[in-house]
Length: 167
Image (cartoon, rainbow, N blue to C red; front, side):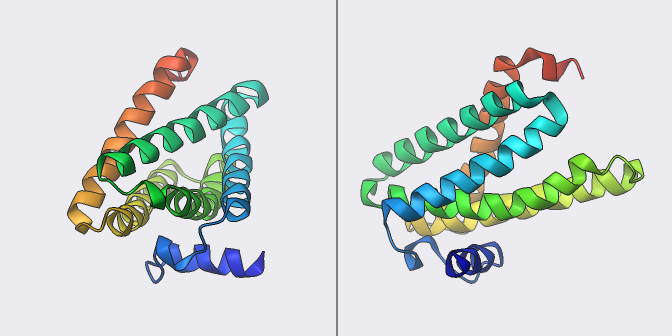
């Protein structure tokens, strides 16, 4: 497990690529499980337990559909497991500062805003890096697809949970 977490850190520092990880179901299962757990914790703090669980599962499902569709479209379906494991593993680590930010209502508003912006930008960069390697393409294409996923998943989640828009 320590080796897997170290790999996720290297992904977040853009020093590793998804193909550097073994393409195994157990690795994908642990990565997705950690991602779901962190997502549930973050969403629960802002929306309550039941909505938090449903939002986290919906987001994981959207990610899996997006990645599978994208890799099939680019004729690289063999990379689905590694790509999902890389995205969910790095997302687990990047979710920990998000957990601090959601829980940190003691911070001043500008500090929270700056923290969220930095975390969002770093997450987009890490996802772009992973997608670039998964698709054997440019970082620009990876960034564009990362932003596309962010926008699409946000719209779907907001439409599925209209009470979030009211806040």
